[in-house]
Length: 395
Image (tube, rainbow, N blue to C red; front, side, top):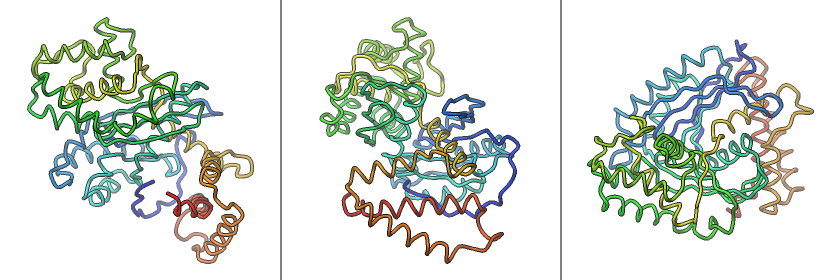
């Protein structure tokens, strides 16, 4: 987690729908709210809202979010807040990604956004975003095969190689459909030169990934982003593929863009109006990935970041209801990290015990400050931090 701005703790409240869990994904192109149920490891969507906010298009030359993009974001969050009325704090998690990782004035935006939403917003790191994406795909589309999972966002692209539920390598690259479209197709013209420049720019970003994400490291490739979904729908609607994204299908899409000559004249079956302005950048990234990494077929994935956030919320809820028997994936993640970085676990336990004693000596009296559930969560976070503190000397 990269940023967790301070927010006054809301008092504990009874929820009207105690089993519902909600994830808000504040992406660079779209803001999404998903509400679902996750009983016994299964998943069922209850509701889904999406607004094309294009927050990433609002970064100016100094790296600040402009007021127009800010207002679009706040308007969307106000709508989400209305939908989430009656949901307890522990039922909702909001995460923000690349644009707010970049924005110099993100604290000012977050202060306004959290006031409108009425809930804390976490700005997560690129690698944490990648981890959540892979975990969401793995839960809804399980397989023991080694996989490459790709997520093309508005201002970043996440790549993950893993098997089962375990990511082996995760990276986040600062190129996305919005940023590349603004860089190479800003005037709306769709030309061979613009696509060539876009592919060169994307290739430069992915150059360092050629080794660890090369074809020999995986057996199947999945794409979890809105870009992959949009291209898949376009290919199906035009009768080019069954929804799989292939190099031949991508070349056909690019040819249609060149034939149109301008974004305003691009009209293809299955291409939504809210995707037209950034489709060229997305196609350039996809084609670069296909040619650089030998991706012959990219299948659209069913899961994504939002679903993993909901499963994490379910694990935390179960831990709060039955601390002795609930399974929290974060405990396993801490153990995996300790093994990976060869942490002195006996020393880590001593540090965690001391930290817990210090916390107990200064925590507010009952009835003051955070609720009992929030205190329990804060205490667990302190324990994890203590058990992983040695990693700071190695990463």
